Image 1 (cartoon, rainbow, N blue to C red):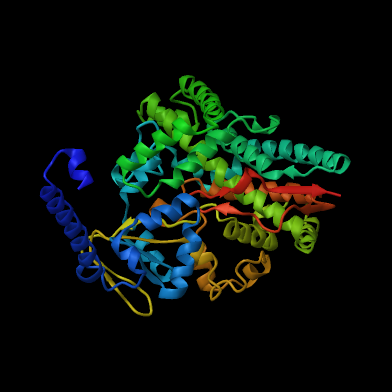
Image 2: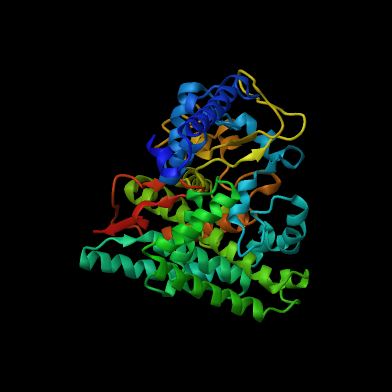
Length: 484
């Protein structure tokens, strides 16, 4: 045998080794298909044998739409890997994520650690997360945000002025405006101004200097579900061959310098995010990591939400006109969060922006889990289980014509619509900044629509195409609007 000659070993030994290896892998495959504790769960044959197929779809950004198609074929409980199950029925949300604190986060969340620190988002151990969250929780209370929103309003005013200038330039130069760049800039400025006491001033930049920083974190989603060792290896290799690595490094340095200035000059008595963490006794190194985590999360999702809403209103002028009529029928001093159609527009934007489209994996605890589905299945302890927002939001039994941007559906929302609407997650581990993000959206849309910035606007493209990573990535990083 050629291989035996190459390795200078007896041919018979190679045959024995090959046979043993083949038998080993076949035995694993047979066990996983027929004897594994999850062998009774519906799903394609390849998913029962290996998770490599799923890793491929995750990397390519097609995971969520692939799982949606499989759910339509196999039902609401789907085996997607040898030890992993995805559920498309919102009835499972409460048990997995809410009751008794919810199931524990899966190990893959460690892949979102920053600079060696588990963040408020990525921490697996609730006891590790608790003192960090407790130190800053008061800043995220809805009452605190609404009473101290002056800095957010100032950021919105600057963004509105910028968009008005951009729209005029669009008219004269017949050039589209990338509103995603502007909404990301607003989101970063608002979160930094309110939480850190100092705006990043991204809205003053032609192109947001933190964009590559944000995109690099978004790209983590390609490998998010991998074991930690595999994630670290692939992330390191990817960073070395990335053709944009110089731009990414420059953006990272810019953000690091901004954060270093915040933390190095923080006072434990300051009522800022970094001041509260310092007062709680956390190191400057960890403080910087927690601040960067907030900058990423506060920029990416809210920027995506607002850009999606603006694009859809430009595409459907009747929705914009109806919203503008509601706003103009009330004094400018009206609390925008009390306006029903504005809330409906925001809810629909949160649903269709798919800022976090993929599954939120958790570990089934001792005692197992009986799925609350029409046909119940028992999942043993240690099974990784999750619900994918993408499949919830495109379920036509809950949201008729689910791919259509239709705010009116929220004026008569059913209990199942409200149950399955989880743009910020849910339970004890839902997004800590959900109230801040929501207030930003209300203030921004109230101002932009009252100023009539979308008059004569038209959406570019037929749809917003995304890569379905943990944090979705807009293809070509553009959501464009042009003005006539």
